[in-house]
Length: 118
Image (cartoon, rainbow, N blue to C red; front, side, top):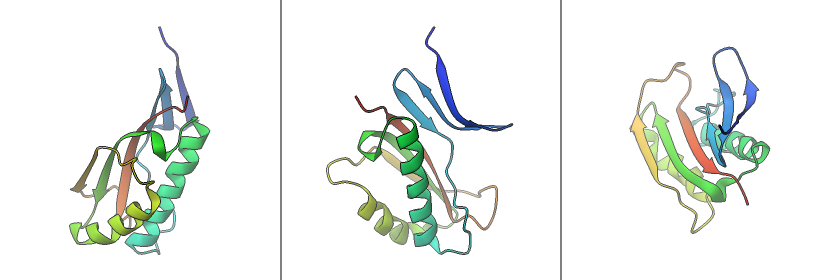
């Protein structure tokens, strides 16, 4: 049976799990809720970059991303930051839905699945 590696294990969840070359990230949310959607999105994407690097991956190896927004009116501004972050030619399958998040001050959350590098 293949082993599962977990990163940053807490009581209820791990920030990432790695199994057979696939990296699964927990939903990433911003720490600084004083920022607008663009600022929160940039922070979340930086967190994703960091976790993927720790797991031996990067944004060029994204397999799927689910974006949860508290207000679809933020869709265009979130996409401005997303488009600037994403490398051309590496757009993953992605879904974006409106959802009530665990904390109302969060404007969005992203769940990522990626392959490991090499």
